[in-house]
Image (cartoon, rainbow, N blue to C red; front, side, top):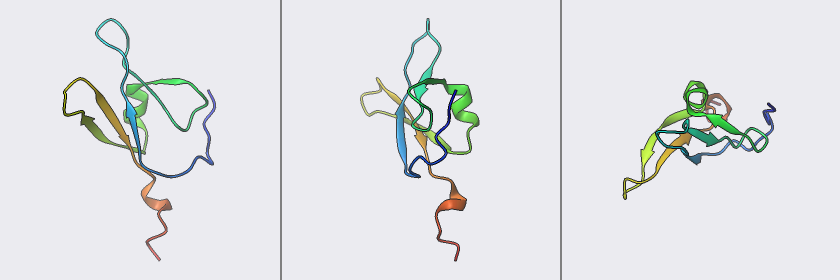
Length: 74
């Protein structure tokens, strides 16, 4: 597993994939083309919240930039 530490720090909406028979996973923008278990994603410092599509058929993980890298605390 490889994590891109130089990935752009921007808000990302990651669609949760999987159903009752398959584990829930997301495609992390900071990892090289790998699916990540949602539990690992929820433990990440970038995890913000979950969002549900208005149709109720899709769930998204909100992946936020690190608070300490915003540069607004000058």
